[in-house]
Length: 247
Ligand code: PGA
Image 1 (tube, rainbow, N blue to C red):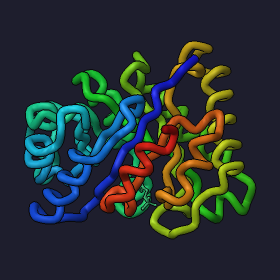
Image 2 (cartoon, rainbow, N blue to C red; image 1 turned 180 degrees about the horizontal axis):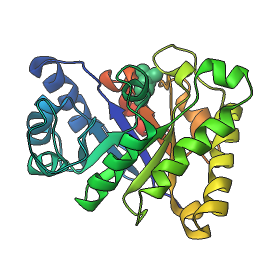
Image 3 (tube, rainbow, N blue to C red; image 1 turned 180 degrees about the vertical axis):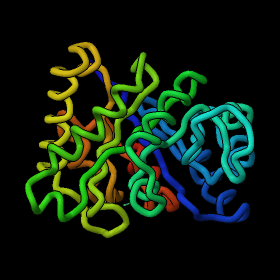
C-alpha cells in the first residue's frame, strides 16, 4: 500500500519572528515534492505567526499540548487552541518531553486520546535511550511506548508514528539506514500483531534523529521509512532537500 511520504520539521525552542520569517520564505519559494506531506512544528507562541506566513500546502503543528480542553493549567495549551490558531497537528511523546520534562507513558497516552478526540493529527514519538539499545532492550522499549499510544487511539487515520532513537537526537549520530529499517519493520509487525493489518499497512512510520540533507536519501530508500521528523536541519535551507528525499 502506498503511504504518502511525510516530513515534519520540529523547530523546538528555536527562532525569532525574524529568523522564522526567513526560513518560511525559503520553504514557500522552494521547489517541494508535491508527493510529500510537510508539517512544521512551531513553538506555541509562534503558531499563529507560522500559520499566517507559511504556504497553505505546508501544515503547522504544535510541539505539545495538554490532555484536557481548558481550565486552571497555567502554562499549558489545548488542542482546541492549537486548532484555533490554524494548526492541524501536534507532536506528542517527543523524547525531550519524556526525558527532560519527565512525561510518563500514561500522560502521553492521555494527551494522544484528547488530541485525536479534538480532531488534531498526532505525530506520536517513541524511541530507546543509548543504554537501552546497548542492553538489547530496544524492541521492548519501543513496543511498550507504542502499546500505550495504541491503547489511546480509536482511529489511526490522523496518526503518524515517529521512531526517534534518543541517542540520535541532536547528536549528529544518525541511525544507519539498516538500524532505522530494522526498528520500523519490527514496529510494523507489532502493529500487525496487536492492532490490525490495515493499520500496519497504512500507518506512516517516520524516522527522527540527526536527519540531514546528506543522509536523507539513503534513509528514505528503506521500505518501512515513510518520512522524517527533523530537528536541527529543519531550521536550515537543507530542509527542502529532506522534503525532496524521495523525489
Ligand atoms: P534532530 O532532532 O534532527 O536535531 O536530531 C530530531 C527530533 O528531535 O525530532
